[in-house]
Amino acid sequence: MNRKKIVAGNWKMNTNLNEAVDLINTLKTTTKQFSAIEKIVFPPFTFLKTVTDSLQNETSFFAGAQNCSEYVKGAYTGEVSAEMLSSVKCKFVLVGHSERRTYFKETDEQLVLKIQQAFKNNLQVIFCFGEVLEERKSEKHFDTVKKQLENVLKNFSEKDIDKIYLAYEPVWAIGTGETATPQQAQEMHAYVRKVIGEIFSNKAAENISILYGGSCNAQNAKELFACADVDGGLIGGASLKADDFCKIIASF
Ligand code: 13P
Image 1 (cartoon, rainbow, N blue to C red):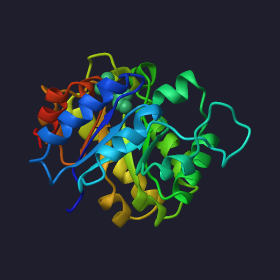
Image 2: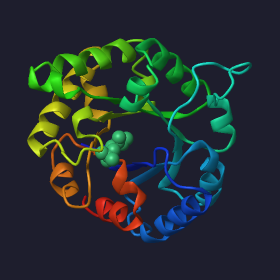
Image 3: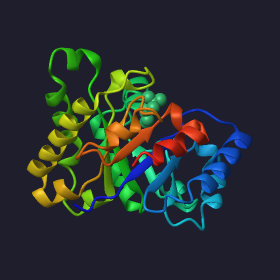
């Protein structure tokens, strides 16, 4: 098995310019020794160019955007296109984060268009999905995740899937301090791999990187990353503290 190990930090709507500069400078230095692990940070749009400039000589540390528009360009006030992101050397974009699905009512149809825009502009995608608490309690979590994956990924080819990392983020674990247990994470990640095998092929399933997100921190990362089908983490709160983010990277 030859999958990449990845630790990504979603800064969400946090930091100002000075804090973003401090954070990226510190992370660049403290994570130098972990060259075998791919590091990605997702700063707010306004600081993306500053961060990509800062990372321009890095070979295993990249920046991504937290969202992109499903439209190409034009009269869409407040939106940021995939082409704009590409022009500031952004390499990744998050699509389908539960906060975008819930607060901004993003639909599967929009997510497909966003991924198409990302690919047209040479951006790699981290596609996020995960069940809410009621779905887990009523044991519908596998069905929910299967639908989220099928509804969007069926619109893409096996070749496209090379440019996607998946992020399983159970909504009940995001920002709550309640993490999925390693057993729950492993069980779902193995299931996700099976679904990818059904949509595409066993080879695609074996090769795709699946990150876990939801209250992953310096204390619990080691156990989660030790799971056979967990290839890394998508970290929210703990990615804002350089020390913690570094400890998470060191957990592999
Ligand atoms: P927390 O790590 O703060 O729970 O956030 C997870 C997340 O939403 C990452 O995208």
